[in-house]
Length: 331
Image (cartoon, rainbow, N blue to C red):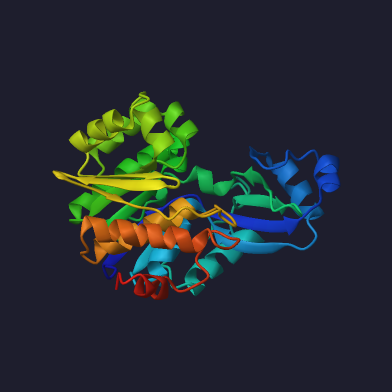
């Protein structure tokens, strides 16, 4: 039996591969500037080979959240799927080096897709053009859920992106069941309004039946409940889910727990790189919840963590979040 974890995440294990590229390179390679495109395996190998000054980092939305929470002192683990190729071994090494439990070893086999990677080309003007090959990570299924890990955590955090496949849906249900049987609480990040559009009924069912907390941004909540009135959407969510969180870019974050509702203001800044803002908000918020803070303080921790990460390039904190929280008087 494993020692209890504070936070276990389940998500797509994505290696972010970052390279600089000028506009003529993007044109020559047929890359649309400034957007995220899903690509196939052959295309992924061509783009990877064309990158010059590659910098690789372990990424993925919930993985980034788990890393942030772990850096604050929570005992964490990440359940995911990587192949035993160079990028998969790199991903495992990077996560374990950060002190994150990595229960699913890289797997071999000709039938296993290569490790998920996102080739990110940064233009001289700072625009990021992302080309993502979903690979092995998107094939996470029920058999990849280690019940000994999911059932031994105080908080389980799921990534909405993985909900795109039936395997992911079954995996989430199995993981939430194990977590609840072990006395833990399960939650989800809605991840993406288009993902919500595709699986609205299933997401609603999951939140009603299995989730104790749900984190989403304004667009995701509006999409989930098919309304243009945020208050209507959040009221519907709060009626079926214990804790509901809505981030709103530069507007105050709304947090609702039973009869308690708080709004946490956000200082508007021009981000250097907005990548990872939502991931680190979740890290700060979940750290606050796991350490018994009030709903408002947990929200303030999320806001502070998000503000730190948008001040530099990359989706994970560069300054110690404990130092950031101390400066804000939160710890």
